[in-house]
Image (cartoon, rainbow, N blue to C red; front, top):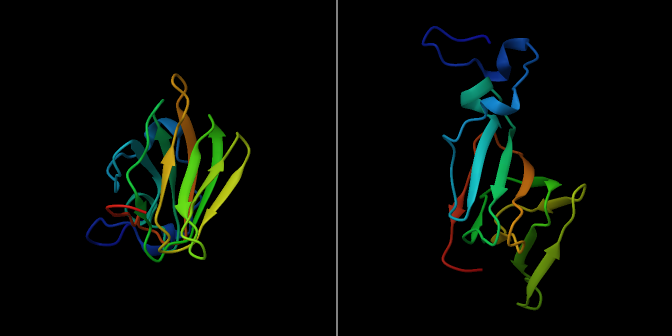
Length: 144
């Protein structure tokens, strides 16, 4: 990795392609109760300018706190389990529950409060997250 004179990763990663092994993800990222986020690609880790990627695990029978991701668009790929994504429909005020399966994708627009739930009593839900900002913006909110 290319670094500037202070040892900080250079923007754009210094022009090299990077491999981030699955076992080397960083837990030093913004967190929300009820889930475990791990960063793989960020400004701090690889010098990314406009992208954050990582893995989130929702433990069996748990629910995340309500939160949004500020100005970031978020793309989610369901790796395993059957996480449920809950948000409030802005037109009706009703809670909407998106029940997912492995191989599904979910898009979360900027500033939309939501939460992740894992209804399984014995299987964790694992998703891969991509955000349109290089930092993991997480704004925990009191309710949807």
